Image (cartoon, rainbow, N blue to C red; front, side, top):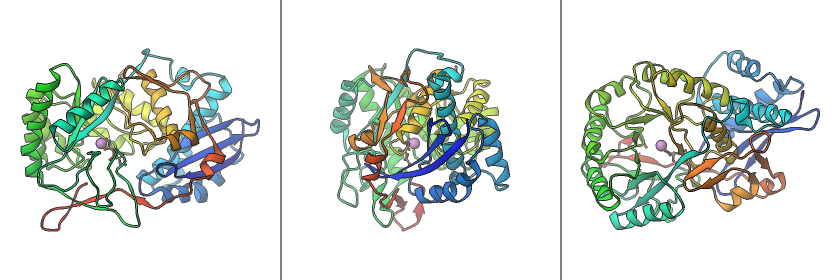
Length: 409
Ligand code: EZ4
Ligand code: CO
Protein backbone atom coordinates (compact mmCIF):
# COMPACT_ATOMS: atom_id res chain seq x y z
CA UNK A 1 0.00 0.00 0.00
CA UNK A 2 2.03 2.96 -1.28
CA UNK A 3 1.11 6.64 -1.09
CA UNK A 4 0.47 7.69 -4.67
CA UNK A 5 -1.06 11.15 -4.18
CA UNK A 6 -1.13 13.66 -1.35
CA UNK A 7 -3.35 16.73 -1.67
CA UNK A 8 -3.96 19.56 0.76
CA UNK A 9 -7.57 20.70 0.49
CA UNK A 10 -8.51 24.12 1.89
CA UNK A 11 -12.20 24.89 2.18
CA UNK A 12 -14.29 27.43 4.09
CA UNK A 13 -17.94 26.29 4.29
CA UNK A 14 -18.86 27.79 7.68
CA UNK A 15 -15.21 28.40 8.61
CA UNK A 16 -11.76 27.49 7.27
CA UNK A 17 -10.68 23.84 7.26
CA UNK A 18 -7.43 22.25 6.06
CA UNK A 19 -7.58 18.57 5.12
CA UNK A 20 -4.83 16.24 3.95
CA UNK A 21 -6.10 13.70 1.42
CA UNK A 22 -3.86 10.70 0.73
CA UNK A 23 -4.55 8.27 -2.13
CA UNK A 24 -2.80 4.90 -2.32
CA UNK A 25 -1.65 3.03 -5.43
CA UNK A 26 -4.66 0.73 -5.03
CA UNK A 27 -7.08 3.67 -4.86
CA UNK A 28 -7.87 3.93 -1.12
CA UNK A 29 -8.38 7.46 0.21
CA UNK A 30 -7.32 8.53 3.73
CA UNK A 31 -8.17 11.87 5.38
CA UNK A 32 -6.45 13.89 8.09
CA UNK A 33 -7.46 17.21 9.68
CA UNK A 34 -4.77 19.94 9.78
CA UNK A 35 -6.92 22.93 10.78
CA UNK A 36 -5.16 25.46 13.03
CA UNK A 37 -7.63 28.25 13.80
CA UNK A 38 -6.41 31.63 12.51
CA UNK A 39 -3.09 30.22 11.23
CA UNK A 40 -4.47 27.77 8.63
CA UNK A 41 -2.20 28.72 5.73
CA UNK A 42 0.98 28.17 7.75
CA UNK A 43 0.03 24.49 8.08
CA UNK A 44 -0.89 24.34 4.38
CA UNK A 45 2.62 25.57 3.47
CA UNK A 46 4.28 23.20 5.96
CA UNK A 47 2.43 20.26 4.41
CA UNK A 48 2.74 21.28 0.77
CA UNK A 49 6.35 22.42 0.83
CA UNK A 50 7.92 20.00 3.29
CA UNK A 51 5.74 16.96 3.98
CA UNK A 52 3.89 15.98 0.80
CA UNK A 53 7.13 15.49 -1.22
CA UNK A 54 8.46 13.17 1.53
CA UNK A 55 5.32 11.03 1.61
CA UNK A 56 4.98 10.18 -2.07
CA UNK A 57 5.96 6.56 -2.74
CA UNK A 58 6.22 5.61 0.96
CA UNK A 59 4.54 2.64 2.64
CA UNK A 60 1.16 3.76 3.98
CA UNK A 61 1.11 0.91 6.54
CA UNK A 62 4.11 2.30 8.46
CA UNK A 63 2.25 4.77 10.70
CA UNK A 64 4.61 4.87 13.67
CA UNK A 65 7.73 4.97 11.49
CA UNK A 66 6.31 7.82 9.38
CA UNK A 67 5.37 9.76 12.53
CA UNK A 68 8.85 9.36 14.03
CA UNK A 69 10.47 10.28 10.70
CA UNK A 70 8.44 13.51 10.35
CA UNK A 71 8.94 14.46 14.03
CA UNK A 72 12.66 13.70 14.33
CA UNK A 73 13.90 14.54 10.84
CA UNK A 74 12.53 18.10 11.15
CA UNK A 75 15.19 18.55 13.89
CA UNK A 76 13.17 21.48 15.33
CA UNK A 77 10.44 19.72 17.26
CA UNK A 78 6.95 20.49 18.52
CA UNK A 79 4.91 23.65 17.96
CA UNK A 80 1.30 23.93 16.76
CA UNK A 81 2.08 24.24 13.03
CA UNK A 82 4.42 21.23 12.94
CA UNK A 83 2.20 19.08 15.12
CA UNK A 84 -1.00 19.88 13.20
CA UNK A 85 0.79 18.89 9.98
CA UNK A 86 2.07 15.63 11.49
CA UNK A 87 -1.39 14.95 12.97
CA UNK A 88 -2.97 15.14 9.53
CA UNK A 89 -0.54 12.54 8.18
CA UNK A 90 -1.01 10.25 11.20
CA UNK A 91 -4.82 10.37 11.07
CA UNK A 92 -4.91 9.87 7.27
CA UNK A 93 -2.65 6.80 7.64
CA UNK A 94 -4.90 5.33 10.38
CA UNK A 95 -7.90 5.97 8.10
CA UNK A 96 -6.14 4.10 5.29
CA UNK A 97 -5.05 1.18 7.47
CA UNK A 98 -8.58 0.73 8.82
CA UNK A 99 -10.06 0.93 5.32
CA UNK A 100 -7.51 -1.64 4.09
CA UNK A 101 -8.56 -3.90 6.99
CA UNK A 102 -12.26 -3.27 6.29
CA UNK A 103 -12.79 -2.22 9.92
CA UNK A 104 -13.95 0.92 11.74
CA UNK A 105 -10.82 2.57 13.12
CA UNK A 106 -11.66 1.94 16.79
CA UNK A 107 -11.24 -1.79 16.17
CA UNK A 108 -7.56 -1.21 15.41
CA UNK A 109 -7.15 0.73 18.67
CA UNK A 110 -8.18 -2.25 20.79
CA UNK A 111 -11.90 -2.32 20.06
CA UNK A 112 -14.74 -0.63 21.95
CA UNK A 113 -14.36 -0.19 25.72
CA UNK A 114 -17.89 1.24 25.96
CA UNK A 115 -21.10 1.36 23.97
CA UNK A 116 -21.43 5.12 23.61
CA UNK A 117 -19.57 8.37 24.22
CA UNK A 118 -20.90 10.98 26.67
CA UNK A 119 -20.81 14.45 25.06
CA UNK A 120 -21.16 17.94 26.47
CA UNK A 121 -22.57 20.98 24.69
CA UNK A 122 -22.14 24.74 25.09
CA UNK A 123 -24.96 26.67 26.76
CA UNK A 124 -24.59 30.41 27.22
CA UNK A 125 -26.55 33.58 27.89
CA UNK A 126 -26.20 37.28 28.51
CA UNK A 127 -28.18 36.88 31.73
CA UNK A 128 -29.66 34.02 33.78
CA UNK A 129 -33.02 33.73 31.95
CA UNK A 130 -31.26 33.57 28.58
CA UNK A 131 -28.76 31.05 29.99
CA UNK A 132 -31.57 28.86 31.38
CA UNK A 133 -33.29 28.88 27.95
CA UNK A 134 -30.04 27.83 26.34
CA UNK A 135 -29.55 24.99 28.86
CA UNK A 136 -33.12 23.79 28.21
CA UNK A 137 -32.52 23.96 24.46
CA UNK A 138 -29.43 21.79 24.85
CA UNK A 139 -31.33 19.32 27.03
CA UNK A 140 -34.02 19.16 24.33
CA UNK A 141 -31.28 18.24 21.83
CA UNK A 142 -30.37 15.38 24.17
CA UNK A 143 -27.28 16.78 25.89
CA UNK A 144 -26.74 15.31 29.36
CA UNK A 145 -23.74 17.44 30.32
CA UNK A 146 -23.53 21.18 29.75
CA UNK A 147 -20.85 23.85 29.65
CA UNK A 148 -22.01 27.17 31.10
CA UNK A 149 -20.63 30.56 29.96
CA UNK A 150 -22.24 33.94 30.61
CA UNK A 151 -21.70 37.61 30.02
CA UNK A 152 -20.04 39.59 32.82
CA UNK A 153 -21.71 42.87 33.82
CA UNK A 154 -19.58 45.73 32.57
CA UNK A 155 -17.84 43.77 29.79
CA UNK A 156 -18.93 44.25 26.18
CA UNK A 157 -18.36 40.77 24.71
CA UNK A 158 -16.68 37.72 26.16
CA UNK A 159 -15.61 34.30 24.98
CA UNK A 160 -18.32 31.68 24.60
CA UNK A 161 -21.52 33.74 24.85
CA UNK A 162 -23.48 33.04 21.67
CA UNK A 163 -26.06 35.84 21.75
CA UNK A 164 -23.62 38.62 22.57
CA UNK A 165 -23.06 41.10 19.82
CA UNK A 166 -19.51 40.98 18.56
CA UNK A 167 -17.61 44.03 17.42
CA UNK A 168 -18.62 42.93 13.90
CA UNK A 169 -22.30 43.14 14.95
CA UNK A 170 -22.88 39.40 14.35
CA UNK A 171 -23.89 36.80 16.92
CA UNK A 172 -21.03 34.96 18.57
CA UNK A 173 -22.75 31.62 18.00
CA UNK A 174 -20.11 29.21 19.24
CA UNK A 175 -17.62 30.12 16.53
CA UNK A 176 -15.14 32.57 18.01
CA UNK A 177 -13.09 33.14 14.84
CA UNK A 178 -14.41 36.01 12.74
CA UNK A 179 -13.93 36.60 9.02
CA UNK A 180 -12.02 39.87 8.88
CA UNK A 181 -8.56 41.18 8.01
CA UNK A 182 -7.63 41.66 11.69
CA UNK A 183 -8.59 40.03 15.01
CA UNK A 184 -11.52 41.65 16.84
CA UNK A 185 -10.68 43.39 20.09
CA UNK A 186 -12.57 42.47 23.27
CA UNK A 187 -12.33 43.66 26.88
CA UNK A 188 -11.61 41.83 30.12
CA UNK A 189 -11.75 42.36 33.90
CA UNK A 190 -10.80 39.37 36.06
CA UNK A 191 -12.17 40.78 39.35
CA UNK A 192 -15.61 41.36 37.80
CA UNK A 193 -15.53 37.79 36.46
CA UNK A 194 -14.52 36.27 39.82
CA UNK A 195 -17.35 38.14 41.56
CA UNK A 196 -20.00 37.24 39.01
CA UNK A 197 -19.41 33.59 38.10
CA UNK A 198 -20.33 31.97 41.46
CA UNK A 199 -23.71 33.76 41.32
CA UNK A 200 -24.30 32.18 37.88
CA UNK A 201 -23.63 28.65 39.09
CA UNK A 202 -25.71 29.25 42.21
CA UNK A 203 -28.61 30.25 39.93
CA UNK A 204 -28.14 27.26 37.62
CA UNK A 205 -28.05 24.76 40.49
CA UNK A 206 -31.15 26.35 42.03
CA UNK A 207 -33.00 26.01 38.70
CA UNK A 208 -31.71 22.63 37.44
CA UNK A 209 -30.88 20.74 40.65
CA UNK A 210 -27.77 18.86 41.76
CA UNK A 211 -27.63 16.09 39.11
CA UNK A 212 -26.83 17.85 35.82
CA UNK A 213 -23.07 17.73 35.08
CA UNK A 214 -21.89 21.34 34.60
CA UNK A 215 -18.60 22.52 33.06
CA UNK A 216 -16.95 25.91 32.68
CA UNK A 217 -14.07 27.26 30.55
CA UNK A 218 -11.85 29.98 32.08
CA UNK A 219 -9.97 30.38 28.77
CA UNK A 220 -6.52 30.98 30.32
CA UNK A 221 -7.41 34.35 31.85
CA UNK A 222 -6.49 34.00 35.52
CA UNK A 223 -3.29 34.08 37.55
CA UNK A 224 -2.70 30.97 39.71
CA UNK A 225 -4.04 32.59 42.88
CA UNK A 226 -7.10 33.97 41.06
CA UNK A 227 -7.79 30.50 39.65
CA UNK A 228 -7.43 29.00 43.14
CA UNK A 229 -9.97 31.50 44.44
CA UNK A 230 -12.42 30.68 41.63
CA UNK A 231 -12.05 26.93 42.10
CA UNK A 232 -12.78 27.34 45.80
CA UNK A 233 -15.79 29.61 45.26
CA UNK A 234 -17.29 27.12 42.77
CA UNK A 235 -16.90 24.07 45.06
CA UNK A 236 -20.49 24.26 46.44
CA UNK A 237 -21.83 23.90 42.87
CA UNK A 238 -20.02 20.62 42.17
CA UNK A 239 -18.56 21.30 38.69
CA UNK A 240 -17.63 18.41 36.38
CA UNK A 241 -14.56 20.51 35.55
CA UNK A 242 -13.03 23.96 35.44
CA UNK A 243 -11.15 24.25 32.15
CA UNK A 244 -8.02 26.25 31.28
CA UNK A 245 -8.05 28.25 34.50
CA UNK A 246 -4.53 29.65 33.89
CA UNK A 247 -2.33 30.08 30.80
CA UNK A 248 -1.04 26.61 30.07
CA UNK A 249 2.66 27.22 29.53
CA UNK A 250 3.52 27.13 33.23
CA UNK A 251 2.74 23.63 34.47
CA UNK A 252 3.71 24.48 38.07
CA UNK A 253 0.89 27.07 38.23
CA UNK A 254 -1.55 24.19 38.51
CA UNK A 255 0.21 22.98 41.68
CA UNK A 256 -0.82 26.17 43.41
CA UNK A 257 -4.40 25.95 42.13
CA UNK A 258 -4.62 22.28 43.10
CA UNK A 259 -3.43 22.92 46.65
CA UNK A 260 -6.41 25.21 47.25
CA UNK A 261 -9.38 23.52 45.60
CA UNK A 262 -11.10 20.20 44.93
CA UNK A 263 -12.87 21.55 41.82
CA UNK A 264 -11.70 19.14 39.06
CA UNK A 265 -9.27 20.72 36.56
CA UNK A 266 -9.10 20.22 32.79
CA UNK A 267 -6.41 21.70 30.58
CA UNK A 268 -4.55 21.29 27.32
CA UNK A 269 -6.51 22.38 24.21
CA UNK A 270 -3.52 24.48 23.09
CA UNK A 271 -0.92 21.83 24.00
CA UNK A 272 0.82 19.96 21.22
CA UNK A 273 2.92 17.16 22.76
CA UNK A 274 3.10 14.93 25.82
CA UNK A 275 5.85 17.21 27.19
CA UNK A 276 3.25 19.90 27.89
CA UNK A 277 1.64 17.40 30.28
CA UNK A 278 4.74 15.86 31.85
CA UNK A 279 4.52 17.58 35.27
CA UNK A 280 0.74 17.89 35.18
CA UNK A 281 0.25 14.15 34.81
CA UNK A 282 3.05 12.75 36.96
CA UNK A 283 2.27 15.13 39.84
CA UNK A 284 -1.49 14.60 39.41
CA UNK A 285 -2.22 18.31 39.03
CA UNK A 286 -5.13 17.84 36.60
CA UNK A 287 -8.13 15.54 36.15
CA UNK A 288 -8.80 15.76 32.39
CA UNK A 289 -6.59 15.94 29.28
CA UNK A 290 -8.10 18.49 26.84
CA UNK A 291 -5.90 18.06 23.76
CA UNK A 292 -7.34 17.69 20.29
CA UNK A 293 -6.11 14.86 18.06
CA UNK A 294 -5.63 17.53 15.36
CA UNK A 295 -3.31 19.72 17.45
CA UNK A 296 -1.32 17.03 19.24
CA UNK A 297 0.27 15.09 16.40
CA UNK A 298 -2.57 12.67 15.69
CA UNK A 299 -4.08 9.47 17.05
CA UNK A 300 -0.72 7.75 17.77
CA UNK A 301 0.63 10.34 20.27
CA UNK A 302 -2.84 11.05 21.76
CA UNK A 303 -3.19 7.34 22.60
CA UNK A 304 0.20 7.45 24.32
CA UNK A 305 -0.67 10.61 26.31
CA UNK A 306 -3.99 9.10 27.42
CA UNK A 307 -2.36 5.78 28.38
CA UNK A 308 0.20 7.75 30.45
CA UNK A 309 -2.63 9.76 32.05
CA UNK A 310 -4.49 6.52 32.86
CA UNK A 311 -1.68 5.48 35.23
CA UNK A 312 -2.69 8.45 37.40
CA UNK A 313 -6.49 8.08 37.08
CA UNK A 314 -6.58 11.13 34.78
CA UNK A 315 -9.25 10.92 32.08
CA UNK A 316 -9.85 12.20 28.57
CA UNK A 317 -11.84 15.32 27.68
CA UNK A 318 -10.88 15.68 24.02
CA UNK A 319 -11.28 19.14 22.48
CA UNK A 320 -14.22 19.22 20.04
CA UNK A 321 -14.96 22.81 18.97
CA UNK A 322 -16.13 23.70 15.47
CA UNK A 323 -12.55 24.47 14.39
CA UNK A 324 -11.82 20.74 14.62
CA UNK A 325 -13.12 19.46 11.26
CA UNK A 326 -15.46 16.46 11.06
CA UNK A 327 -12.31 14.45 10.19
CA UNK A 328 -10.58 15.49 13.45
CA UNK A 329 -13.82 14.92 15.33
CA UNK A 330 -14.17 11.38 13.94
CA UNK A 331 -10.56 10.62 14.97
CA UNK A 332 -11.45 11.72 18.52
CA UNK A 333 -14.59 9.55 18.58
CA UNK A 334 -12.74 6.37 17.59
CA UNK A 335 -10.20 7.04 20.34
CA UNK A 336 -12.94 7.87 22.88
CA UNK A 337 -14.65 4.56 22.20
CA UNK A 338 -11.44 2.52 22.50
CA UNK A 339 -9.53 3.91 25.49
CA UNK A 340 -10.34 2.77 29.02
CA UNK A 341 -9.91 6.16 30.71
CA UNK A 342 -12.53 8.06 28.72
CA UNK A 343 -14.01 11.05 30.55
CA UNK A 344 -16.21 13.15 28.29
CA UNK A 345 -16.19 14.49 24.70
CA UNK A 346 -16.81 18.13 23.77
CA UNK A 347 -19.34 18.35 20.94
CA UNK A 348 -20.22 21.63 19.23
CA UNK A 349 -22.20 20.97 16.13
CA UNK A 350 -21.02 21.88 12.64
CA UNK A 351 -23.26 23.80 10.24
CA UNK A 352 -25.06 22.43 7.18
CA UNK A 353 -22.47 23.72 4.70
CA UNK A 354 -19.66 21.95 6.62
CA UNK A 355 -21.71 18.76 6.72
CA UNK A 356 -22.21 18.92 2.95
CA UNK A 357 -18.43 19.09 2.40
CA UNK A 358 -17.63 16.36 4.97
CA UNK A 359 -20.06 13.43 4.70
CA UNK A 360 -20.12 11.77 8.08
CA UNK A 361 -21.36 8.51 9.58
CA UNK A 362 -21.21 9.27 13.32
CA UNK A 363 -24.39 9.46 15.38
CA UNK A 364 -25.59 11.64 18.29
CA UNK A 365 -28.59 10.54 20.31
CA UNK A 366 -29.71 11.05 23.92
CA UNK A 367 -26.50 12.96 24.59
CA UNK A 368 -24.18 10.20 23.41
CA UNK A 369 -21.97 10.01 20.32
CA UNK A 370 -20.80 6.97 18.33
CA UNK A 371 -18.37 7.01 15.37
CA UNK A 372 -20.36 4.44 13.37
CA UNK A 373 -19.10 1.23 11.81
CA UNK A 374 -17.95 2.15 8.31
CA UNK A 375 -14.38 1.08 7.53
CA UNK A 376 -11.84 3.78 8.49
CA UNK A 377 -12.81 7.07 10.12
CA UNK A 378 -16.23 7.08 8.47
CA UNK A 379 -15.85 10.52 6.87
CA UNK A 380 -15.78 11.28 3.13
CA UNK A 381 -14.59 14.58 1.68
CA UNK A 382 -16.80 15.84 -1.14
CA UNK A 383 -14.13 17.60 -3.20
CA UNK A 384 -16.64 19.34 -5.51
CA UNK A 385 -18.53 20.80 -2.56
CA UNK A 386 -15.24 21.80 -0.90
CA UNK A 387 -14.28 23.71 -4.06
CA UNK A 388 -17.33 25.95 -3.71
CA UNK A 389 -15.93 27.55 -0.54
CA UNK A 390 -12.57 29.27 -0.99
CA UNK A 391 -10.41 30.26 2.00
CA UNK A 392 -11.42 33.46 3.81
CA UNK A 393 -9.13 35.31 6.19
CA UNK A 394 -10.43 34.86 9.76
CA UNK A 395 -8.95 35.39 13.20
CA UNK A 396 -9.76 34.60 16.82
CA UNK A 397 -10.40 37.74 18.90
CA UNK A 398 -8.00 39.09 21.52
CA UNK A 399 -8.43 41.01 24.78
CA UNK A 400 -7.30 44.33 26.20
CA UNK A 401 -7.69 45.40 29.83
CA UNK A 402 -9.28 48.78 30.65
CA UNK A 403 -5.85 50.49 30.53
CA UNK A 404 -5.09 49.07 27.08
CA UNK A 405 -2.83 46.16 28.13
CA UNK A 406 -3.14 43.05 25.93
CA UNK A 407 -4.47 40.16 28.06
CA UNK A 408 -4.89 36.41 27.51
CA UNK A 409 -7.92 35.63 25.39
O1 EZ4 B 1 -11.73 28.86 21.90
O2 EZ4 B 1 -11.40 26.13 19.66
O3 EZ4 B 1 -13.21 24.65 24.87
N1 EZ4 B 1 -13.25 25.17 23.80
C1 EZ4 B 1 -12.61 26.28 23.46
C2 EZ4 B 1 -12.68 26.64 21.98
C3 EZ4 B 1 -11.53 27.53 21.55
C4 EZ4 B 1 -11.39 27.46 20.06
C5 EZ4 B 1 -10.11 28.12 19.59
O4 EZ4 B 1 -9.84 27.77 18.28
O5 EZ4 B 1 -12.00 26.93 24.27
O6 EZ4 B 1 -13.92 27.17 21.64
CO1 CO C 1 -11.59 25.64 25.96
